[in-house]
Image (cartoon, rainbow, N blue to C red; front, side, top):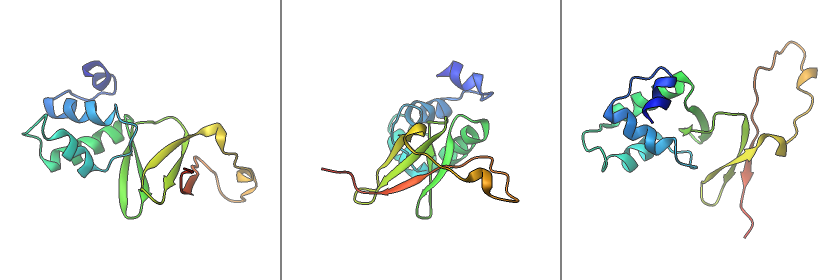
Length: 128
């Protein structure tokens, strides 16, 4: 983990390492509070403010992406390559959808707009 943080220009500290070990190894899309709740037992000196600052630093450096996928809540996504999301409306769980699984057409016909990036967010329920 030290090498990975250093590769992104992030000075490793015990708190940053603890946050990175959790958030970079999860398939979930946690909020900052969820990260804090999952890491605080391993690093009791970790404050909520440190978690927020660390996650924002990771996002600024490109190690994570912030995603406004839940109403009024930002989640952190360790999967930084292009992909889409599916939100299960029953559980609130966010799932990654491979980029090639969804086709978007017509972005080149949007006059006066230069599309830099797009992402499709699908909402529904998982089939049982």
